Length: 282
Image 1: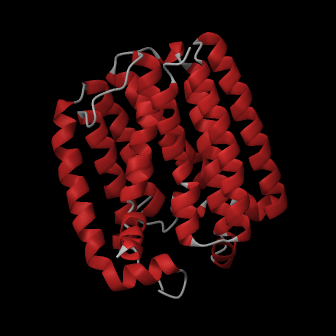
Image 2 (image 1 turned 180 degrees about the vertical axis):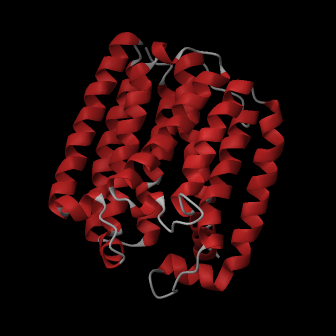
């Protein structure tokens, strides 16, 4: 029963949706000084959109179940992608009417970026963003950064210029995680002639880049602490950085869809929870 639930929450991207909301809460904790409501319209919208985008990827394309455990699960349980996709569409469709206009505008850009990741850029061209190597990782990192840091700032009517390091922190953190996932997909990407960053510079150099990213994340966290002092928030960032390093080393030795989706993605949830619950320590 536990295995079935774990497979379901990971492979339907429900867990990814929770991770996205957790990062959103981390930003809200910084700009408001308190924990936001459990499920605000913004949270419901972000959670629903995550379900829509990630499940659409499996509904719009056909995959061989031999590729990985995740695709094998999808072949047996494809109905769940329809159910979760529809649930996410309803949730995000209702909640958007409770959000300000500037978030609507941002969502148009995010929607275009998200769906051109899976769908062709042009009707007469089969090229998708995920097929363009460097652009793939930058697009994913940018989308996650906007969703989890910029949208909360817009929701609370804060200036982006007041929190530049929060946005940079989120970008670097998500870039590290995205590089890890691209390392996982090196062989399948190479077989489809998709020259992602790890395929261009090699796995070992990619792991070195991850280490650099973690150091940059820590430096930015210190700068953020100088601007908005919070020992708890800084400690949370340090713990999250160490845990991310450990998670990536573990998945390097034990690569599997479940480990990547549960442990590497789980660093988002960990970071969000640490920041949310310990930021009050000044």
